[in-house]
Length: 353
Image 1: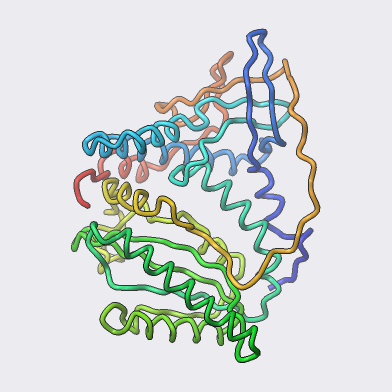
Image 2 (image 1 turned 180 degrees about the vertical axis):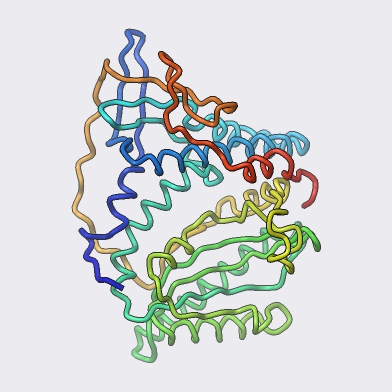
């Protein structure tokens, strides 16, 4: 793989176009814009934004139905905030500005968060000579144990890291270095949840130590040896993206043991998805361990400015796009695939959990 310095990170230019921004309206027809805005020149990036908006709105409406049945007003409010995220955007001098809900279940905001983390961690991980991708699992649990199971695996992992940090300080071992992410799957056949950890560690020795400790602490009663995996990382960029992706799988195969045969029959189990979001609340989904990031020089944020020359765009769910308020022009020209529309219209399951 070609070597890149921090300043020549191949992902840097792409992800900087997704930087957060904001707007405020004035009664005199002017608006205040904040931040750098997003570059409008890359049509693929714009279409990706429109696709995420479509998926988010369709999924969130079903999540709202679920929480209304359960009477949870707090998550209902958060879901509505996400539904309205970027419903209105503004373009100024070739840049797009919008307000963000910043909720972890918003695919629009998650893409921005993911970009920030990639820009932050890629230069460091690229320096590791032989990183390993590690998966740590425990047995699946029914709904009422999911939160405790997540807390338990996070605590267990923290104890492993702390133990070897102390040993390293005493000169008796290596310090475990890496990043970890919490994720959970839902099995619609058994109605169980599978919280687990994904890691990238600096080398094979660390991967072997972590897996051995994991199995010893949980014992054979709670973990299977074949469920723990350690594989060398050949593509550091791809591995990093895998680690910091969305914390739960939105699309789930109807039978997790027959993934190949289930192609085209995926479903979105929103009641289970809501349970995962509920269980993850208050937990650190992504975290580094064993190292500190180098301090970056403080970058001055662009001052907010008042602009009078701008275009306003409002999202139209029927058009799957933002429409110009003055001339009905489409912002992205995104046209969703028929398979995606079929999934979002006919295969959202609000009962299984």
